[in-house]
Length: 342
Image (cartoon, rainbow, N blue to C red; front, side, top):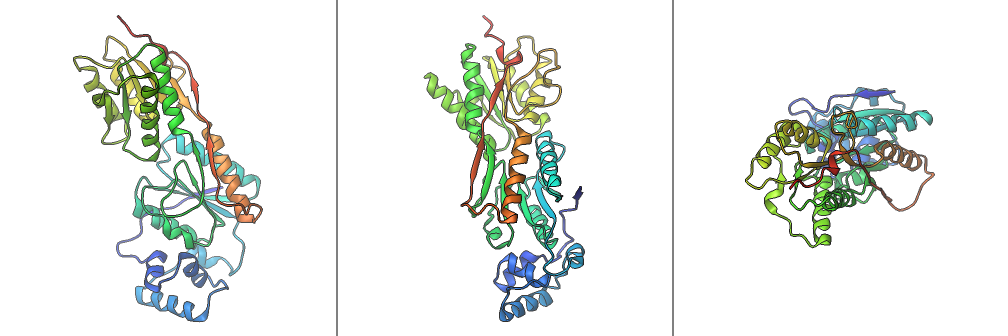
């Protein structure tokens, strides 16, 4: 069972974050006062209620319907664009694990929007979810320290809070992709990077490490920072690269959307470079030249995150915050094995 809800609040609508700031307390304290929970001193509760009255805050209707003290049977998952197969796979796996334990999952989709993420999380805490799984943006997440529910970050670490994180070995995967192209004899290897979020930044580190390990200097003109992580931006950049007087003979696409754009552009090129993508995608093995990719078990990423959150929510896992890193593997299909042409 899942539910998708809007993450945009109305103009000027106060949130629990606003109430917490006005009252000088944490989000968890505001949630307990709003929902009739225990454990808040009367003096503090009065301060929260005064801030609520002053700001005109109204709690979420789903949370209003819950009985005070009732244990939630819902988890929350806040992630990026659900049209991205990577996020969709994480969500599906998390839903399956949660469902096995009788939990529903409320989905919130925010695409690199810190304010939208905050509003989504405020809404979820108002629904009294048992825990939060978050693919975090690049903002400060210290406000979650007082949320009153366990938090597991997925795919990227967060700033300002020490919490569980489940991610993949992005740096190792970037190195693996580049080393594979180097092993085919390529020396002019371009990397096309989606905007520098944590994941693609680590993949660039791996690209540079592979060059250093081979004793080959990186040509910085082949390190392409895209304005957007879209197929269209990657297609345009690939055309420009391939029209250079000395074009690259190998291409490393840092995401599945970037790989899509690269492949579109290469339909117009006579001399085909070798291509390695990061993250597998549907039909990659069905193209005229099947696409070589570095991939991790994305479904396992979602399963592990959901299992960890359920254990935290139940009190079964009381260890210090965990950092779980899943390995990457190279899947050779043909595009990454194209040799350097004379």
